[in-house]
Image (cartoon, rainbow, N blue to C red; front, side, top):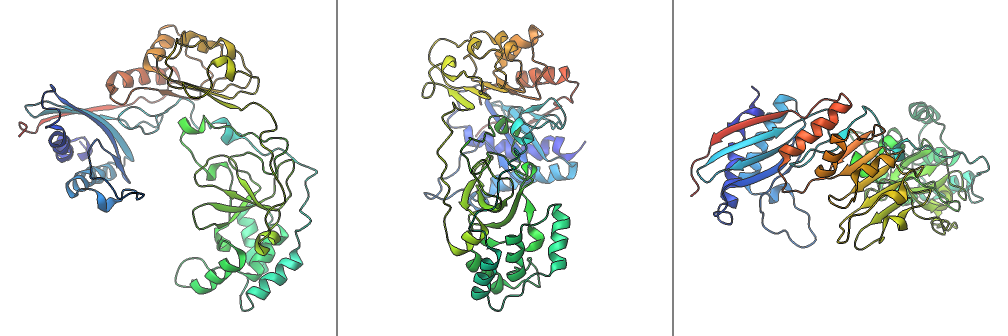
Length: 460
């Protein structure tokens, strides 16, 4: 039996859970715990000291006993070839402890104590990640795009720079599978930062960054910022929408085969040349891909020439073109009803906290583009109305609602992924049972449980 499935591997963590909760839960019949540990991180129900204002917690901030206990499990995961494991457990006052390890399963994304997203169709991607750019045959470069002016400007700023050779540029084009636009070729013919390593010229790279206006990638680090380069867990990706308003300069995509990333703004956001612009954009415009967002990009400059010369874009986006949003939130602070959310272009309906009568889905029945429904437990008047959502590919509802669908044989077969929305303190074992029933409908691998039991000794 691998070490990760042995009680002794988890015993130090269980003691921390027991000791940390003993005082406040002394009157409880048992201490319940749940969390997740992966090879790179962990999420554990332990109290820690407060961090300085505005500073995120670092590994060195963790108590030493927590770090040692978690790393003990991480080593066992690595030895077993397992990336991550969720767990739930119960510790009795007399020290008897039962721990259940959940998963992993190739058909389930990692969760924290509860099962994560159920991947019902192998390899399926959420709709925004399948969306390709619309053709814009009338799009042309901006009037400001001037390769000769760009080259003169760069050579004035970098008189001693050594640029890339034509062979090196051709090799980059072959690797990327797309020809580089002339302005980008000029940029690398003049200013070429070296890749990291012994041959790196840090000072030259810094001068190049100042001259260009961003942290310039080495030629070998150029990449196509397509959808796969912007990964996102299913349960978040399914709630996004890739929509391009008719007056947009940039297409509202996750990624595009025409987005060539060449630099960084110093804060983790990527700069790219856009060869697939929106209806009012220009071929070769410069866009910014935020590291805090999964969909879309913002226009920075109409051309690489403008970027280097410090000229802001002259294009202005006037909003959503007057169309209702493709993503709607119905809850106590947003839209007041499902009726208010309904329209033919609706793609995502999220029903959150609700303090009135449960809601009917009748107003959105048979909407042609509604592919995602996420409803907080207890908010649906009749879960069987879900069957009227004919385009559904992602469903997130509570365990009671899933039970209704399963018992009626009414789970939509159009689904590609699903989530059982459970409270954080809810016993995960019944949730796992429901998850495995859902997985069985698609002949997908089940969540495997391992039960570990031992004694920690009485509470002190």
